Amino acid sequence: MIQPAPQPAFSLAEARHLVKDLFTPRPLLYWADFLGSAIGGMVCFALVRRRLEPFSLAQGIVFVICCLLFYRAVLFTHEMTHLRQNEFRMFRIVWNLLCGIPMLMPSFTYYTHVEHHMRKYFGTDHDGEYIPLGTQSPWNIAWYLCQPFWLPIAAVIRFMLLTPLTWISPQIRDWALKHASSMIMDPTYIRPLPTRKVLLIFRLQELLCFLWCMGVATAMYLGIVPPLGFLATAYSVSVVILFLNALRTLGAHRYTNDEGQMTFVEQMLDSVNYPNRPFLSALWAPVGLRFHALHHLFPSMPYHNLAEAHERLMRDLPADSPYRQTESPSLFAALRELYRNARENSARSRAYRPLRHTGLGGQSLSAN
Image (tube, rainbow, N blue to C red):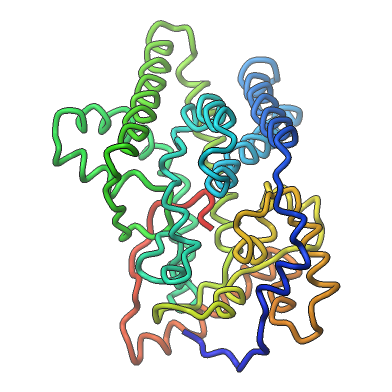
C-alpha cells in the first residue's frame, strides 16, 4: 500500500454532531423513488420492445432512460442493507418482487455487503468488495470492465440450472452458497454459510428466481413472448446496468491497499465523494452513492440526506480535516488516477512482493 503522509486527527464524534439530525429515513420518499424508477423502467422496456421503431433515435433514447431507471431501482438493495432489519419490511418484499427476482439479484446476494463496512475487514482478504487495482496491472482494470458481458448469462445459469441441483445435493448447495451467491468484486471471496434461519430466506428467494426463469422460458416456448426480441433487450439492459455499476465501483475507492487492515483515516481517504455536477453524478451513482466516503463514515444515514450532510461537513469541519481530501472533481478524474496508480505501482509491487488479490470476477452492485 502507498504510505500516506501523516494526517491531522479526525474526530468522528465532531462529524457526527454536525449531522446528528440527518439519520431518519423518509419512507414515503423511498417508496416514491423506487416505485417511480421501477415502473418507469418497465414502461420504457415495453416501449423499446414493442412500440418504437427498431434502431431509431426514439428507441435509443428510451433505451437509455430504461437502463438508468432500472439501475436506480436496483441500487436500492444497497440502501436496504443499511436499514435496520425490523424496518421497511414491506419495502424489501416489494423490491424483491419487482426488481430483485426479475433481475436475478435477490436481496440475499447482497447481505455480505456489511463486511465491507467492518473496520477490521475493509480492504482485506475478508472484503469481497475490494481489490487493490491501484497496485496491479492496468490490464486487470480492463478485465474487470469486461465482466458485465457474461454476468447476465452466469446469473441465468445460477438460478435456472444450479438452483434445482442445490435441492438434491448438499455438496452443490454448499458450493453455490459459498462461491455463487454474492454480489462481490473479488472472485476469491468465500462466503460463510448462512444460519438455518437465514438459509430459509435464501431458499425462498432462490425458488422465486427459478420460477421466474422457468416462467419466462415457458412464455417464450409458447410464443407469448418473442424470444429473440425479449432476450436481446433484456441482455442489453443488463449489460448497460452492470457496466455503469462497474464504472461506479471503480470510482468508489482508490484501491491502493494490499497490506491488510487500514486505520480509520486511511479507510476514509481510500473512499471518494463526488459533490460536483449533482444531476450527472446521480445518474451513474444513484441513491446517494456519489457520496461514498461520507457513506463509509455514516453507513446508516439515508441516501436522501447525504448531500446536506456533506455540505455541512465541508463547511464546519476544521480547514485541515482529512475529510476534505475525499472529494474528486469527476468520475473521469478518479478513473484516470486509478489507471495512473496501477501503471506506476504495479511494476514496483511485483519487484518486491506478491499481490494479495490476483483474480477478477463477479462484480458488486453496491459493494461499495
